[in-house]
Length: 222
Ligand code: UTP
Image 1 (spheres, helix red, strand yellow):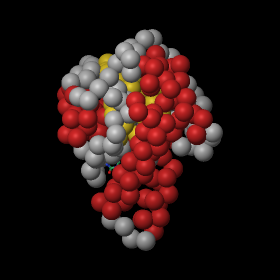
Image 2 (image 1 turned 135 degrees about the vertical axis):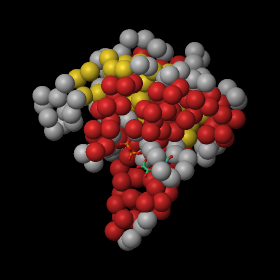
Image 3 (image 1 turned 45 degrees about the horizontal axis):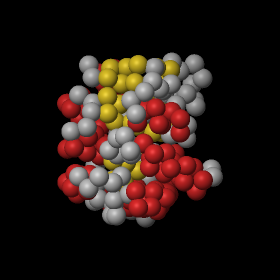
């Protein structure tokens, strides 16, 4: 599961949301093995924007972003208590080792050059997992940013090929992508399903994790 920083720390009653999310993850971990990758959200943006103003290179800004993702992972780990693996893995290899321990593994980014969505796809390949849940601040994939274009088309089903076209168009326009284009490419190679859901809607997150019907967008190979 890739969960955006915009879901974890939007500064909207975050502590109570994180506690409710942790309770849900603990509950579903009786049925599924969970690896959760946290995004950096506004803390990452604060550091990368400030780092940019003082002359940071792209590599340095990525390292700042990764730091923020790992802070969010530590936050979720605190809420999970002893249901969580006891460290935040720094690499996909470390995540694979941690995953065999049977507890919920929570991590952030790994190395510069991509986002946590791509880490989710890399980790899914490494642990042989078919389903990736992407919990974000929007409730589905749209043809355009629904906050800007009220007529944007909402998709309930897409193929990975169709999602790939959408994320590459978004990328070209310089927008934050609904899913990292590298992550989509890796998911195409691995044959993953990606379930795009609103992260603050915990009933929806639960359905996605358990493979039940969702209101958001189901993205399947093809
Ligand atoms: P996020 O995964 O939160 O990316 O990582 P994002 O797309 O900016 O945020 P959301 O998904 O819209 O909430 C934050 C930043 O950290 C760096 C990148 O600079 C990224 O933009 N990062 C993260 C890495 O360089 N490598 C990683 O593995 C993860």
